[in-house]
Amino acid sequence: MVCLVKEELVGILRTRFGDSLIVDEEVVRAYSRDMSGVQGAAGGVIRVTSTSQVKEAVDFARDHGVPLVARGAGTSLDGESVPFDGALVLDFSPMKRVLDFDVDNHLVTVEPGVVNRELNNYLGQKGFFLPPNPGSWEMSTIGGNTSTNAAGPRSYKYGSFRRWVKGLEVVLGTGEVTRLGHYTTKSSSGLDLVSLLVGSEGTLGLFTKVVLRVEPLPESRVGVIVPVSGVRQATKAVVELSRRPWLGISALEFVDDKCISALNAVYGDTLPEAPAALFLEVEGSRREFESRLEELLNTLSGFELVGDPLYEENVDGMWDIRGRIAFALGKLYGENRYRDDVAVPVSSFPELVSGVSRILEEKGLEYAVFGHAGDGNLHLEFDRTKLSAAELDSLLRQIFGLTLSLRGTLSGEHGIGWLKLPYVDLEHTGEAINLMRSIKRVFDPKNILNPRKAY
Image 1 (cartoon, rainbow, N blue to C red):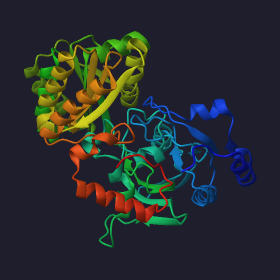
Image 2 (cartoon, one colour; image 1 turned 180 degrees about the vertical axis):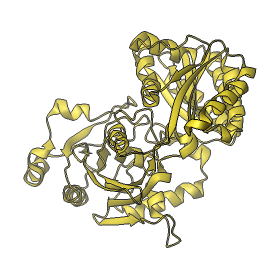
Image 3 (spheres, one colour; image 1 turned 90 degrees about the horizontal axis):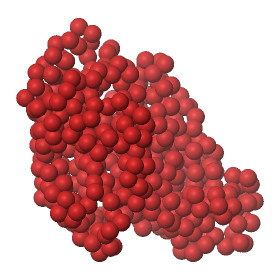
Image 4 (cartoon, rainbow, N blue to C red; image 1 turned 180 degrees about the horizontal axis):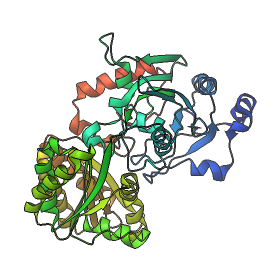
């Protein structure tokens, strides 16, 4: 690998990509990090506009030994889109067209730069929606969501992105352009290569088109914000609610008091100040709604509520508020915070939250916990300013060790990227990691696509 894109290569790139190539130092520096805070070193940026340009970039990278890193909105939290070794960043944000909407078969084909929230606005006008709504859905792109197998509040009912991706057009590390997937409801034909590529963090191929299955909008849905007397009670309520699928809950979230206070202070929200809160979305027909909400509140009454629930008719607006937690915490407590996500079976979620809280409190660290509780997916943020690199490593190993002891996983949705790479062998066997690396060599034999990430 080269350390920088050399001057003679810049000339070749300029000939091939014209004004799509950016080498201005200040602009390139902005592309050298993402929301993880990891600082990399890009050699240049190409704002790609077509499949042929992406293929041209891969061919160039193969010929000259330059790594490539795909980037959508840069909202990744584990350094997935951070370039190292003078890598070229391929900015997919100009590729933001909706190419086709097959209403009868509930399929939409988009370019990877389409923003999740904007796609849902488009679909909503036609009576449909794409269920997975990451907290970053106001900014994050479909390409990035696909490459990390992103999830969000509604993944409690509807699952992560992998469940909704039906097909891909992808440029492999070999330079080949191929189409994968099928348009049928089911298929028993060949290996499921689409599922393999979803969540591969840009290490196997670069998506240029994504075919997504979408759903008709529910007849009715409402958001419910429930203030609870404490974190323990809130997490136990999550487990109890997860046993009642007939309530029509499509999202089941948990936040602590620091999250509530931060949102109110930074964005002027009027959330009820409480030790903890649940954010829920309930779906159903209009005639089902009253009985579902009544049973929901009867169930929650046994978990020490500390105020009346708030009902939000604008459910997407509620999720916009929920998605700003990380930004609010950053503005209130400073940006030098470590952000992480782990996940366990939902029955172990209370034990995970209490265990993580105990670990952080023993270290005397300021922290906040929240997350997609119905999925057993915990997000945590803590102040790392007082920790040396060795102390941070030891702390993370404690948190990951607890998570895995509860039959959990190192990441429920953020991915591994660069930050979690040192810990992958805690979860996966050596044989499993070798299999992943063998697959990488088939798709990307020269190791030019997002090297030093994921596995």
